[in-house]
Structures are given as C-alpha cells and as structure tokens.
Image (cartoon, rainbow, N blue to C red):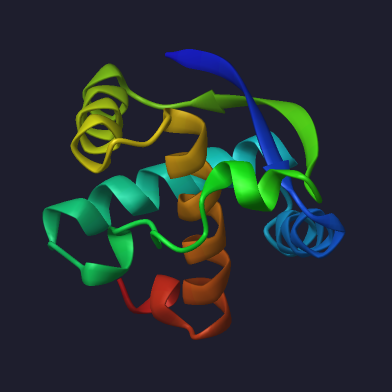
Length: 116
C-alpha cells in the first residue's frame, strides 16, 4: 500500500537521506519506506528511541524545514501499526515518519541495521 505524504527536513537531513539512499542504491522514497518498516519493527521491541522527542515539536522545527512529497510503500498492517503509534504519541503520521527516517540514519551509522 502506497501513501504520499509531505515530510520536512532541514538541508542536512535531506542531504543525509540522499547519501544513504545512494549507498543503499534506492530512491529517497525507497529509503523512507525502509525506515518506516524498520521503525515499525522497533516498536515491537519497545525500544525507547521510538518515542518522538517532545522538545522538538514539528511546528518549532518546521520553520527551517524543506518539505517534499514522499511516497512510502508499506504493508497495510505496518501502516496501521504506525497510525496507532502516531495517535498514541499524539503526533501526525508525518512527524512519526520524519523521526523514523532519522532513527534509521542513526542506526545505519551505528551498524545496527546489519545486526538485525
């Protein structure tokens, strides 16, 4: 199931996503889809890093963000898991996917993706 959402990152965020996508030989959309799937799997592990930081509200960070439409492909069950988590954290699904993308970059940098 594919959904197109508007996600926002600063220039460093987009550049980091672009570099990781190139390293994985995929598109930004493909990378963010992988990040969302990774985040959904981390929810099952009850990892504390799945909680969005409260001090970094989307509105506060958004003034520097460059927003772009991204098409994310996930199974319906994972979309549902993400939707429930977004509601639980009282955040829009876009904020959850932005966080998931940054968590994915951090885990890739630390070698956590290969370990799983």
